[in-house]
Image (cartoon, rainbow, N blue to C red; front, side, top):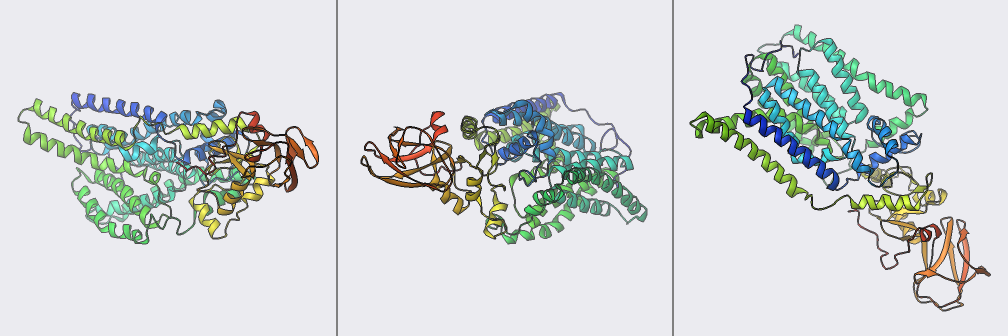
Length: 580
């Protein structure tokens, strides 16, 4: 399908060297991109997926098995690979910063892949500038900063394409590409859309670039496809075998596949008319692909260019037409591939402008560098004004981890949405995210959060109710008091001032060790007819009567460990915090 002898350039002849000024300019821009990346690693707000992925990675360090012992709805390769680093770093509030730094090598791999592909299909100059523009592309920049499985998935897919299009497509090369594609599936099941788009592109590219259909070539394409398929089955088969041996194959299938297959998840942001996106796009993509093929130096290069273009654009259309929950990270593999096609057009436009306005070669070179750097400057401006580095967006997660680590011990449970507590297991098995919400509303998952809080003796919950099921939020409002980013077990016994000797009955829902607290200090009195002189263990569902020895404004029961750790109930801030 994509066989060609290796040439000095895509045009088949000796390629002009990259002008020195452009080499320096692109290199400086790549260094600026690296510097901005390091800055935003420290300042860019954490996405809710990041602690979820980190919590899942942490689970592997505890000897727990993903899907069986704790829930996740992503394939496990990413978490398995980074679990040694999480184990080495230990429990610390700034761990996400280090995990983001661990994404930098994967970012470099992605840049290398597009540079290699652009060089092979167009020119060294195109490859260099594709990498430079991609490194500063706003829509790709922020998402690729984050600690998420998509940042392993993307370079694996780019590596697959690079192997396919940068050399003679032998059976060995096809098998190696298949191995990388299989690893893509182990990193994200969204690879199904990539693989389907790639398969359609592989079928269409030779036909769009051929004067007549060659059945010999069709046979060769089929054989190569079989080797790709064989390689693609290797890693997923090994992964399934591992989970089967550990008795968790069914759990893997549900968590990584079936849980995500829910229709109508994002109807508000993904209206039904967008299902027509791909069918409407296809005729235009065919015309554009034909044009790309006609303007290529030879048929071999034409097929590769058209394949790459169609693999990216069909995937883009498929996201809108068939994907149930559309997120910004779904587009991470799209931008690098489409830039390989777009950057040469940008360079042609810049060269034409320089030729028109620069009568002298030195002046034309200066115009070219100025124009290319101007494009990059616009990208940098979008980054800086899109998310100001002066704002520290990481504080919330650090505060959550600080409170969790200060209040809880290893082995204890907390309640959060997606793993924000990172180093503690969640009382409710499922991750609370859009797919789970739909399943809860449809009765496919039982809302037993309150029961699980009692059973696991969970004393700490995240102080944000926006993603909690309604019944769970009501239970936590009644039985947990805010201390900051978290709530701990406790309840208000009297909202109005109470006189000494008044009998105050109350029930305890969550078993724990409590103190009676009022007006910023412990109180004294009689509890269940006995003198009260300090913290008491209350069992679940127990009923008690307290008589204070003094008058108090507001009387509460409050978790004793929180008092010992220096926290007090924030009774004047009983409202739940916003998620952001």
